[in-house]
Length: 531
Image 1 (cartoon, helix red, strand yellow):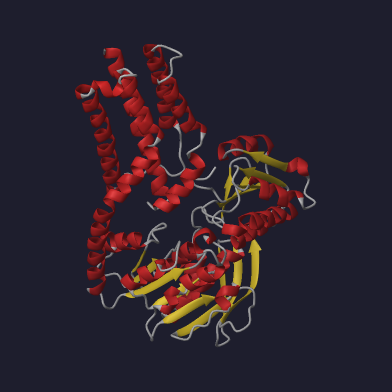
Image 2 (cartoon, one colour):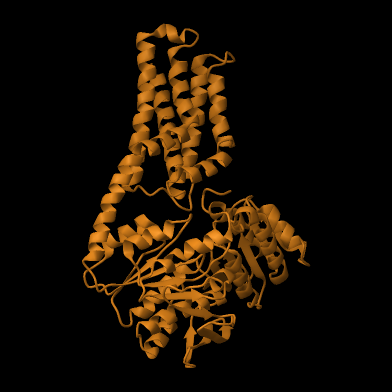
């Protein structure tokens, strides 16, 4: 009896850890069941779950006696528990109040199922005439492991009214805080890419004159913005910079309806999140929800270097457009861009013809473009040119966004691992190509969430990589074929093309091939939901 209790406990712990992993993946998919289901379709037939299913069939077979099968199952569960507990994730589960609620309801559902089986065993033993109580109990625990994802989804559905009520209360509290600060200048920033960097640059420049609060990290969802306002906003803040992200139409309007920005910056419109948006036109209309929400005396700042920014008319407010690539009909021009290992220099030409010469520690056309958008807003808000110049010169690199570091051993690292998109990836490769002291090495899993253009755009990136770098290391399976096809379509030396299954495998490979003087670009780092 004690042996079986120990076995039940082991299987119960394994079940709990299964729930934890599913909730972790749910969190990485923004608690959205449709996105979680998309990940699940690729994971539900994985070897991990098939092992649980195999144990379940073994338990109810007549191949071995129940005691021996139970011990085997317990040993397998111990091994899997050890793997789960020691496995390192890029984004571990964050035990927020919402996660605790989901975990609690998931546990209640699981316990309820186990309790029902227990009552059945006790009061209607004839219902399981063909099997013994150990088989039924262990079988229930294993079955819960196999369908743990379904129980998590059920918990989310059950909690939906509760979450809506909590979110509405938080929303109202944030709205009341903003209403109590009528003089607060609110700046919204959105774009397919570049919004986070632009936010950081603008915060640094405006801090020369104002007390500034910005949404931290990637707090660019409605709840992220609400949390920033409720937990971080102070009565003495003069400017609030609000990053606005979107995965579907209406997302940005939802944030704007809360914060009511007076200034809006659109940094880019490109083929990002096409799996949910379906078309670039839908991306454009969603990003410009920010501009459409501005008051009549507001200001729109738009990056004309992207076709679907430049061709979008803005007639409801004053609109200032900027360009790094010399696009016609732009108000602010960036000229004389020069790069060096120590940074960049460039000139911003204003509509009045004034030349503002700036230097920065940052590299890459994308960073220059993001700085230009910030400079336009700073000038509009009356920040003196000299203060802008000092701020731009002191701006540090944003973590994982094309920042350059030299490590012991004489190797230079270009870290662009936060995210990747067609425009930014090409720019990162361009930056890498300028380092010529040693081998130019790229480590990348490619780009994601590009819809029907996923294969095409990754193939094009592969070809561009083949034309500009010396060594290419392709990580993972998701974009492997497209990237390899693209690299091999160029004149690239195929002996320098490597394919590995994981980032850790890439690091092990780098340790054997890197030498002093080499430069390594880490381009994108897919979350745990992608292989």
